Image 1 (cartoon, helix red, strand yellow):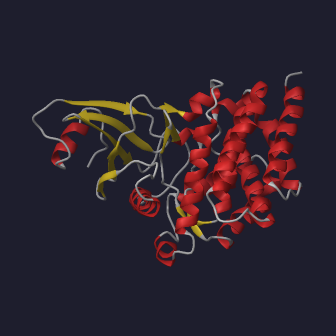
Image 2 (cartoon, rainbow, N blue to C red):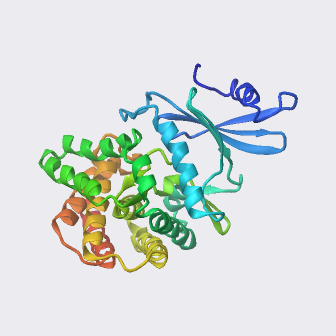
Length: 338
């Protein structure tokens, strides 16, 4: 089957009995990340999102096996089953293992992308807490589940995360062993179903609610990875908007408060140290790896300075990690602007 496009999505959905072939079908292309096509469809008085995984993309050198689509569908089912009716993710309606297409419920049209909001200087601490709570509930309710451990032991989609981190060695060859060790720790401390993509670019905010998108990377892993990855993405915005550093750190604090409130017991020192290293690794990945965020392109060198410093320093509490990162961003921003 050829890849779907705006002209063929309606007929495809009719062939799958998702929509009728009698009424009008409106199709709107959406941003599909880097190796997917995504469409918003309105038909029969309902709205859907249609996502098709692609074998490769001309937009990036990132690669991951096409079976990641099947694993994403499985992850969505497992997450909704684990978290219950208040699960903040779309409902999966159809998954086509031949065409690698997933049809899911759509978030309200008024929803705004969290990443765009942060870049525009609009923070949403309540949303941050809700997303942190989502991560904690996911880890708590799947932790130690042997069936999930078997089913999500591997996922070809995780290559997207693995490659973004390992590729940093191209720009920073002296960190190759450090990055390998960080990824080894993720495997060694695997204890729950981990999302691996909880970032503002995958969060829609609508009123008092949020919708978490994209589960291609999900697998059995170290919960501390989700913490470090999520917090890194709030802090990275500060390199582009240093005047908003304090507000962005507060947003990260809100996320972490949501996380710690909904998990059993405070994270121990080992958890914090690993989360700190995952945070630093994701800072490097987004600025010096195979997929550099556009807004970080002018700041590659200073992000690397901050991330390297964090890797070298031990911190027992996440609050000190956030405070130290804010201090370092302020210092390098001053130098960067000279």
